[in-house]
Length: 98
Image 1 (tube, helix red, strand yellow):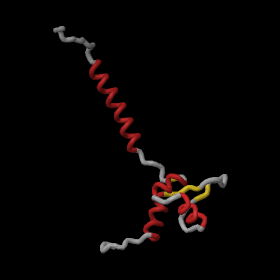
Image 2 (cartoon, one colour; image 1 turned 60 degrees about the vertical axis):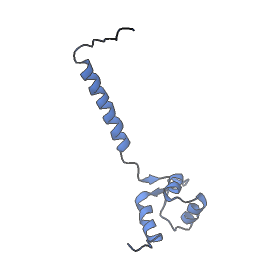
Image 3 (spheres, rainbow, N blue to C red; image 1 turned 180 degrees about the horizontal axis):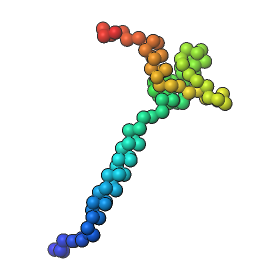
Image 4 (cartoon, one colour; image 1 turned 180 degrees about the vertical axis):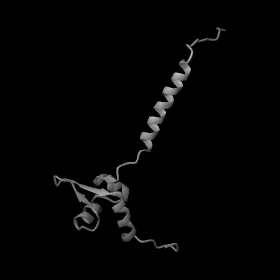
């Protein structure tokens, strides 16, 4: 059997390593919990609403769903709050709690 490995560390090094790990974890956790942008591009809006591309294009073209054109005119943007409000009116609850 081989002898166990022993390692001697300078005083305070373990504390410095622990502090550095804590700082890195704090940064990672705070960036993971940072609020996402409320703005969705077309593909993200399709996923958010669980709509197909054709359905969302038709609703946007008919101005039946709230959307915003990008400044250059290419592409649409959707705001989550506006989509949520639209969903409340376009798809009212039908259960007994409504």
